Length: 282
Ligand SMILES: NC(=O)c1ccc[n+]([C@@H]2O[C@H](COP(=O)([O-])OP(=O)(O)OC[C@H]3O[C@@H](n4cnc5c(N)ncnc54)[C@H](O)[C@@H]3O)[C@@H](O)[C@H]2O)c1
Image (cartoon, rainbow, N blue to C red; front, side):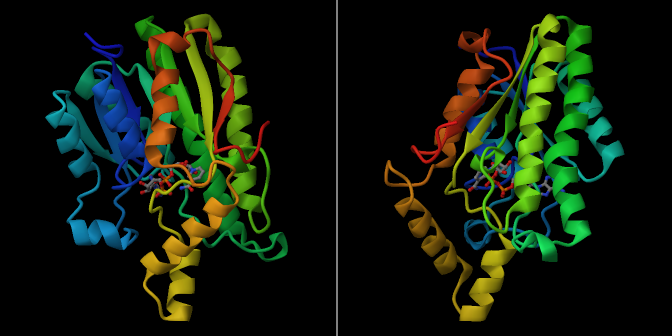
């Protein structure tokens, strides 16, 4: 028996080969959880490294989870579709019989938001709020209702950002959506405490996740360089700002998520913990 044996976790945005969602899936499966993996049909929004590796998103993560001896199932869901979010929670419960842990990890693809607030398009603003804030709210609502009905408590972990606490230039939409996620975390923690459901946030600084960025793609096209070269430059520059000398790996984030999802975190709720190598302290 391990800490999460018999538990079921639902993770959104779980298909990236170097993503936080995959790292969380592996970490929780190692702790004994069965895993419901969700992602949007990513179409062309796939990092070059995944194409080269023949990576198949959540299907590939599911194979890894099964290799660890746990059950895994895949649920394609566009979190911009509110009705689909409700169906996702129902489908996972139908497949596994329960949901004990929810990890809200997906987010809007960055890039089009990286402009001054005066140039920020309303559609981009709406998309960031929709995917980064409203989708976690709707999933918490649907999943917490199931948890309450099951009467076994539960764990919810929202993946925030350093931008949940300190906005950056050209980051108004992302910061607003991620600040709001902290408000959601605190409010939901208070509402769900009496049911033994904890709600916390994990706030990474830059992560070496190979996340798709339309801004990095545009820069690569403008400079005639491969996206990987631009990405490596961004990672190296970001590392210089971090007291511990590197940016986070997805596993650094997953370790804290696993702790918050585990039995030793039963008295922690409404908190927002940083995983940033020492860049900000609040
Ligand atoms: N990478 C970083 O530097 C960094 C830093 C701080 C916080 N974070 C946070 O960590 C989390 C994971 O980020 P990441 O870098 O591992 O992955 P990522 O940026 O590649 O995106 C996460 C996932 O969201 C999914 N997604 C995009 N649009 C979707 C939609 N419409 N419906 C459903 N899913 C959709 C993507 O397919 C992807 O699997 C995010 O919440 C992000 O804000 C990341």
